[in-house]
Length: 184
Image 1 (cartoon, rainbow, N blue to C red):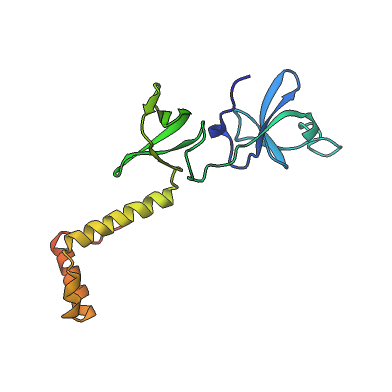
Image 2: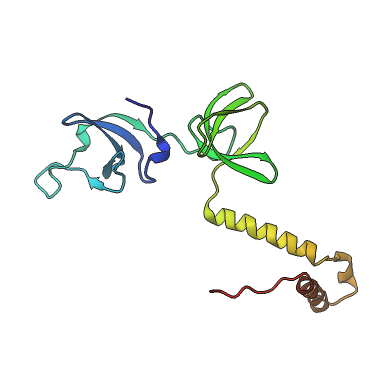
C-alpha cells in the first residue's frame, strides 16, 4: 500500500480507510459518506439496512482508518507532505510540497518539477493563499503603485482642504495614465 496523498483528498474528507471487498479499495471518509480514491467526484452515503443504499459500503467495513492530519496554519515550519508557498525573496512566491527536514535544511519539490530541492537556510513558508487573498494582495500593490505615481505629499494636507488634496492626487493619477477600465 502506498503513502496517502492528502493533496488529492476532497475537502469534506476527515480520513482515509481501506475496504476489503473483492480486493482492497481505498476510500476517503467522513461520518456521513465515502468516496473511492481516484473517483472523488462520486460520493456515496454509507449502506446497510433495507433502504436504497443498502448495497453501499457500511462504516463497519472500513478498516485501517487514518485520520486526516491537522491543517497547517502557518505557524512554525510546515509538516512533511504539506503543499504550501515558499518565499525565496520578498517579491517571489513558489508553490512547493515539503518532502523532508533535517535541522535547518528543508527538502521540497516545486509544483510541476520532478527533482527535489534543498533550502539550507530557515525559509519563509506560508499556507497557499485563496484566490481572494491573492486578489487582495494584488489590489494593495496596485494601490501602492498608484500612490507612488500620484506623488502624494502628506505635508501638503496642512495647506489644502481635503477636497483640494484629493483633486491633486486624482489629477496626478490621471497624468500618470490611470483610467477606468470598461468592462466587456
